[in-house]
Length: 285
Image (cartoon, rainbow, N blue to C red; front, side, top):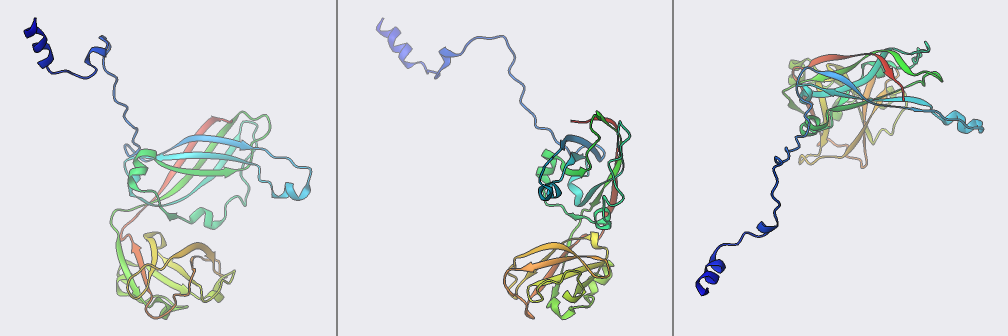
């Protein structure tokens, strides 16, 4: 008896082994997260909402914006090559009552042709796809579907990127930047004087860049001091009085001196893709 107890004490014990139920069910399959960087580039509709508003106050009613909002996802094997994206531009948007949800002034020229840099990292694009939004006029009351939806989204795709550094960019104030590498790439950039802008900003706090040629090849413009420390800047689009779109950079401090440096990140080669949207009989919310 003593030897039996000693043997049982000596055998290795597996924690919780006695509590494990015996079952014939197979183990659960591991959950695999979806990826969106496979197959051809395409657009899919994810969500839609309609906002209808009413107010008895005329001032409040004038500020209200009823709208039909749509959320699309772009997917495809070249998704991580997207470096700039445009807006959703519809050419046809009609509900099943025949009401057209577009006006002649729905889109400006900047809306139609402008692009903005891609901000999402590649891994997030693979896991979520590229989400884009569109806002348009409301459908008619009683409409059940969007009978016909036609449009496109402009994408700029690229692989390689190189940096071009411009020392003392303010020497080109009001002129084209003279740089041999920019010329070799066919990229022309001009520093616009504030007097040329439609809305004149503070002259000692802003720099406006007009990408005269190959603006879509430029991914980003950054500013640095003489020791190559980044100079924080906030950017926003602006219009020249002659109608061209440029990019305005605001500085919180006044870093303007001859030691400032401008670094342009440029894609030597790009693909300019117009991704079509073609859908019929889409149910309204």
